[in-house]
Length: 162
Image (cartoon, rainbow, N blue to C red):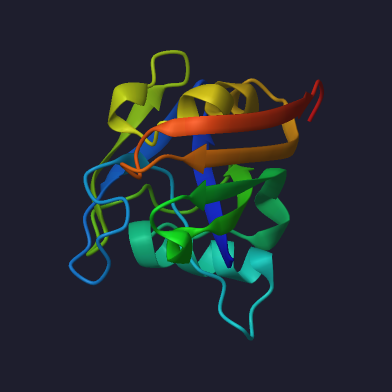
């Protein structure tokens, strides 16, 4: 199972999301998401978050400004090589607002209460609003079906306060 990161840059009641567009990797292309990716063997999880945010948005964050809000396991029945454990963070302080990169297209702020979930991964509708409202995902597991885009099983446990 791959170990990955995902971080959302929050500004007041808004979040930066960008469209995944990568010529290197097709995984998630066309979907809106936060910033993140694979953890290199010589990195801590937080080091990977900082690096990925910079590579994908050109924004600079400090490790001490990251707040871990959960870990989610994602399984893909037809593409087990996509199975991943994703360490989820939010960050409310950074230098330089996000701009386009080779992987992330058209970053913009979205109201946290009006997120275009139809443009995101199917599992996001089950957990993302919780973390934007200050809750922690204590344990979560999502299984995608044969189409690799529809959730067919889910387990999620939320803690009230972050």
